[in-house]
Image (cartoon, rainbow, N blue to C red; front, side, top):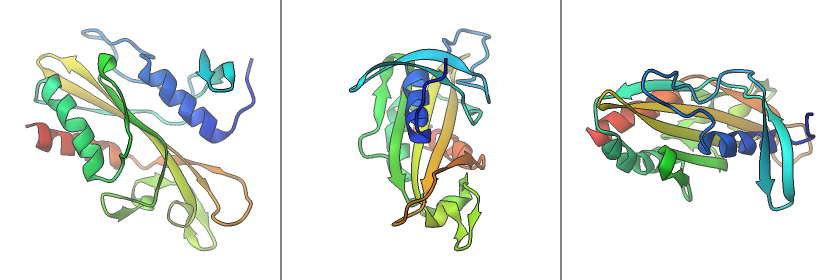
Amino acid sequence: MRASRSPLTSLVAVFAFASLGAGCASAGADHTIRTRDMPVSTTIETSTGVHSVDIRNSAASLGADIPAPIDQVWAALPKVYDAIGLTQGGRTNPQDYAYAVANKRIARIAGKPLDVYLDCGDSIDGPRANVYDVRVGILTRLVRKNGETHVETLVQAVAKPRGVSGNSVICRSRGTLEPLIAESLAATAG
C-alpha cells in the first residue's frame, strides 16, 4: 500500500528510516544504507499519527574508508557538517553512528553554488539548484571496518520555485558532496 505524501515528506521518511538502522552492518556485510529504487514498507510516527509508507529511495549512497578509529571520525562529523554550511540542529543517532540534516534550506555548500552538488534540472533562469528554493536531507553513517571507519553519505533534495506557485522537483546528487564530506572527515579526524 502506497501512502500519499509530498516529495519532502518522503525525503524526511527516508532519513527517519535510515537513521533508525535500515541495514544493520556486520563484518563483511554490504554497508550500503539504501540502494536506488528498492521499495521498503515501514511505519513512520509523526505528530499527525502513525503512517504506513513505502519508501523508494531516489539515490544510492556513496561510501569511503577512512584510516581512523570510528570514535575520532564520529567526533569530527558535526564539525565537518558545520564547516561546509550544513548544520544548525543536525540530528544524531549515536547508537548507529548516524548524523543527518533533514528539510534544511540551503543556497550554497562549502561556499559553492548548489548546482556543483545537485542536479535539479534547468529553468529559463539557469540551473534550478541555484534559482529555486532548495531543501536538502543529508545522512552520513559510520561503520567500523577492520580498525578503520567506513563513511557512507546519502544526499537528497527537493527544489521549488521561489515566490510563485509551482511544482517541486526532485534533485539528484552529482556525486561531489559525498566525497567532500569523506575527505573533510579524513582531514579533520586524522
